[in-house]
Image (cartoon, rainbow, N blue to C red; front, top):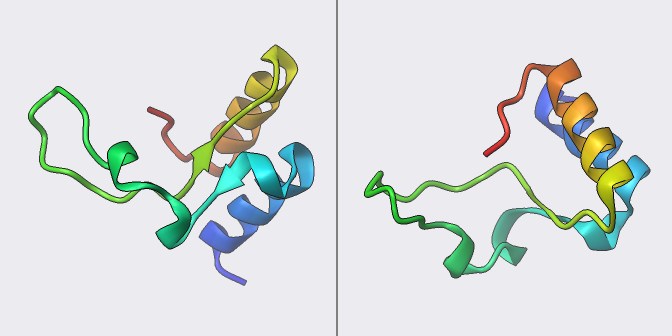
Length: 69
């Protein structure tokens, strides 16, 4: 298993599959922002339900050394 797959699995385990969107399921509107930086594809789109989910997601991403934007 790759580190990316392990990260996604851990996020799904903690937040639930409905809150972790990956791959082609990420809508095009989430691939751009107003910074002018060319669009890119995120590893995942997270939809936390509450602040505890946000804290858990940030802790998991930090543990894997994955930046969050």
